Amino acid sequence: MSLLDHFSTQLDVLKQQGDLRQFTSNIQQDRYIIIHDQKMLNLASNDYLGLGSNIHLREQFFDETPNTARWMSSSSSRLLTGNFSEYEQLEASLSQAFHGRSALLFNSGYHMNIGILPALADSKTLILADKLIHASMIDGIRLSTAKYVRYRHNDLIHLTQLLQKYHADDAFERIIIVTESIFSMDGDETDLAELVRIKKQFSKVMLYVDEAHAIGVRGEHGLGCAEQYGVMGEIDLLVGTFGKAMASIGGYLICHQVIRDYLINSMRPLIFSTAQPPICMAWTDFIFKKVLHLNAERQHLQQLSQYLQQAVQAKGFDCPSTSHIVPVIIGESTKTVGKAKALQNAGFYIMPVRPPTVPQNSSRLRISLTAQIQQTDLHQLIDLL
Ligand SMILES: *Cc1c(COP(=O)(O)O)cnc(C)c1O
Image (cartoon, rainbow, N blue to C red; front, side, top):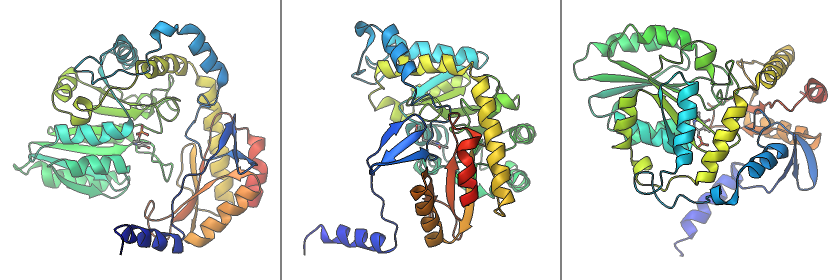
């Protein structure tokens, strides 16, 4: 028996269950995606503002960036020789936009979430995490030595009960609440104003909020739900990613300068990984400055999202979404996969999401809208639901 048999048997099992994952080659054109020669409206993209597929932005960026500034590698971590001026420029832009708080950059949102929590949370820390947080934060919690307890999804009453129980416990010097603002599977959102109000009642508590799906999309300047709800200065650890609406790559943290200095001295994915190429930093800064002024796109996306949420509800589906991520919850997995296939055949690229990514019997179609899509693009889709 070959050493590989074990792995190929596991793959066969996945295949039989219809759960085998594979890469699909694709070509993207504006709001369309072409797979196996079939052109479909792309309703599975995280390019929420359509900036990633905008060729004019790329042209402008490269026209403005001379070859001497096109560094394609930083060749080391920022603590060695990798701290190019492009890093400091982007951090300065972020800091200015976020009312003077400190900013720190990471190679990806995944690095950020697996790095910050283990660096900050020791055995005297309790982490209280929403039941549906992203895998990257779960991995971060697992890498830390903290005790952790999950609270029911978006249930701030349950969270308050846990705070009342654990805050008095002398075993814990710190409690970190970990959540997302807009959640990636239900498209629903945390009441950040209420969360901040709760946190303020407990002196040991810090807030960690991941705005991966909200940065660029929410708030007057696109700075996320924290801006929208006026609590930008009150979330101790405000994180997000540049890989979605920001059309780039990387993660950021907005925090107090003490936390920034501490992470530079303790966060392993920051210390032991080569920093992103300076050209990526320059591009992110270029996009970030544009995003501050894209209010019309944000409003369009908001209106389009409300239109689709209402249409999905009118069709008799449960729709928890209050955002541009709109799930159509079908329940049974094979039925969901069949429905997704039929919609793809009709020209709508929509992906099915099944357990374990979502709870049992809540398989769904996950529609993610972008600012490039028009209401009329959705009429036929809604009929087909
Ligand atoms: C996508 C995502 C991440 C990971 O960010 P990357 O930059 O893609 O590594 C982290 N958190 C949440 C909530 C996400 O949706």
